[in-house]
Length: 260
Ligand code: ADP
Image 1: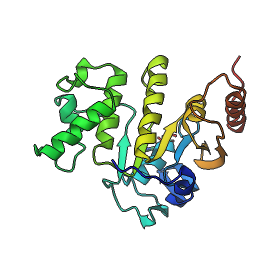
Image 2 (image 1 turned 90 degrees about the horizontal axis):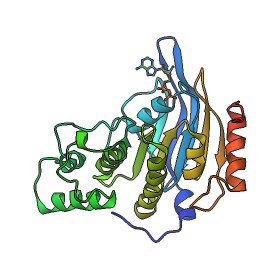
Image 3 (image 1 turned 90 degrees about the vertical axis):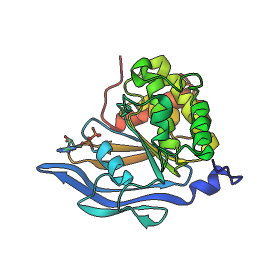
Image 4 (image 1 turned 120 degrees about the vertical axis):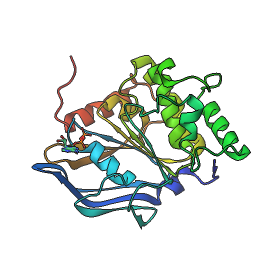
């Protein structure tokens, strides 16, 4: 895993992902319309918005899994023309292979999943340790909790040491306490790997907890409404004044009522 001595400020000032005027329609649904945004190198960017505002469509386009109708997406200055090992994707519903063990699923993220060379073995081992799954190498997905399955999903995405981690509501299916723990673990991994992260969620609290910057989207058509920089030191406490203020600001921008 590449470690750099550069300060986060220097890294973030370099654009890693550039989305320029991207539109995408499915039949009569305008999933994205004129979406532009940029994500700095090493930045943790969260995208929030109501269901159907095009978050997944945007993430899939950055991953190279879907083509925009118009506009362009650049990664490191180069146009995205398809999926690549420079971008790892983590899905909400884990997307694990039920017939493969934890080790087998994680190894699938390698360029050569069937390769048994010491380097590939060592890489799988390193990832199992990084996500805290020691002792579960030979377990099958059905034997794991939701949080453990998502650790496997994260490890698999990290296997080729991608520069970018794309996460689509990865913790949407786990309970609140596990989610909190996974937030801490993810931030630790991010601090170690210095990857650029784009994290989709509809949970404003989650976005404020994690992000350097939150991109707020509107639905019908899916557009970027605003971006909010979260200027709070980590670890962040949900009850802290600044945290509550940021959540209220984003909630107001989304037109969501205050919870009672
Ligand atoms: P979000 O992730 O914000 O919930 P999506 O990107 O999944 O939003 O979807 C944006 C809009 O595009 C929604 O109205 C959705 O129904 C529509 N959509 C997404 N994928 C498809 C598809 N494969 N076929 C038809 N409509 C789709």
